[in-house]
Image 1 (cartoon, rainbow, N blue to C red):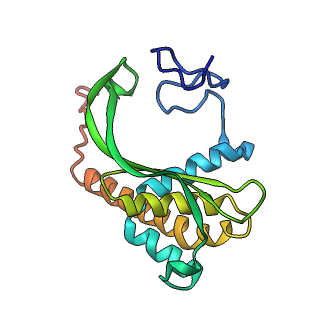
Image 2 (cartoon, rainbow, N blue to C red):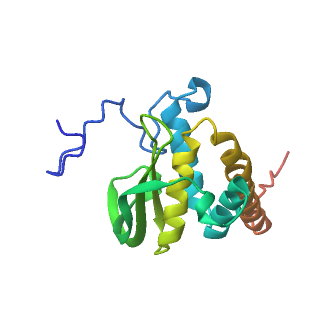
Length: 190
C-alpha cells in the first residue's frame, strides 16, 4: 500500500499503533532508545516554534555573518509556499477527531549541495505566512543532519529556543496556579 494513500485509507507506515493521547507508539521511549527518527521529530518540533529572528541570529553566528554567500548552497525541492491545513481536535484529548477549522501553513523543502554523496534534505512546516522563516528552518533541519554542523546548530539554536519555550511554559503554569482554588472538606462530629 502506498504510504501516502489519498483514497481515505490510513497510510501504511509500518509502525506500531499510536496511543490516542500523545501520538507516540505505546511503550516507546525515544530518549531511551536513541531513535534517530524520534530525535529528528523533536528538533523539527523545536524548529517549528523558533521565531524568524532566532533562526537568523543562530545561523548568522554559526556561519560568522549575515552574508548568505558564506552559508551552504542548496537546491529547492519545494520552494516556500503557503497554503491551508485543516486543524483537528479531540474532545478531552481522547474522543473521536473532529475538524475545528483551517490554519495558514508555510512549507519548504531543500537539499544541500556539495556536502556528500547523499546530501541531506531539510524540511519545514511553519504556522503563518513567513516564507523566509520556513526557508531558514529547512536549512537548519538539513544542517542538523550533518555531523560537522549539528553541534553548532544545537548550541546556537535548539538550546536557546528550548529554554525560551520552557520559560514561556513555566510562566503560563504560574499564571494558572495563581488562580487555582483549593477546596477543603470539614468533618463534623469527630
